[in-house]
Length: 295
Image 1: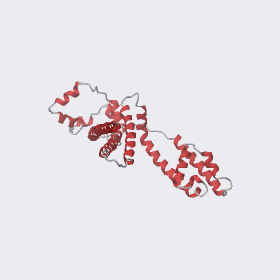
Image 2: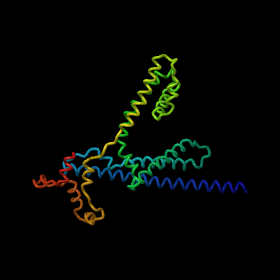
Image 3: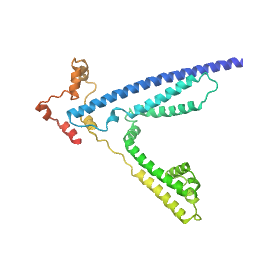
């Protein structure tokens, strides 16, 4: 009786695992295909927008690629690939008794982390809930530049502290312990203990060097963090978008799709079929002049 109940439980549990993994695999594949489609469309839209500004306004748009190919979409594609790999690995090892579960647990943990981070992209569609998303997107370029410079300084201090203070301080005995110690000092942890490990019985040069080293390191990183500011985005692209307003529900856009010459109209709108007459080359609107001055 107990064996039959146990067999039913194992069968139902295995069936549930197969259904969940299969459903997750299908959703991840669909999501990955849609994200790749979105990236391709964004890439073509970027090419058309660059051509539009170049042909009509004489402006060479630079640095707007990520406005059309969203980094969040690339992040979701990586997430989908991790989930797909995890689901396939879980389904392929379902009938095996002895399986190494460490790779599966790594993939499942990373996949769960990426999935919940990716939810922030969809939360950002609501303006009231997108404060965090807008803050992250505006601070990423400056944050990356700051991290590159900060890592160079951090590893420079780590190597110096490891070489000089390693024989006299337990926290600087190895390179990894030096990195961990300096990182904890940035966050204000164990400052007093780190200072007191090297006492006055040590050589005076080492004692003085340790104080100057720690004072300079902590002060430098605190100063850098307090003086990091973001930059405003004032590109010609966003100036043009803010200058114009069109109702997306207007019937004008629907009529363009039914016109027999819609392909010619599309090329003319992008500036590929501009007339070379004097009137068209010399006549500009005030909004065009403002955009040109921004360049």
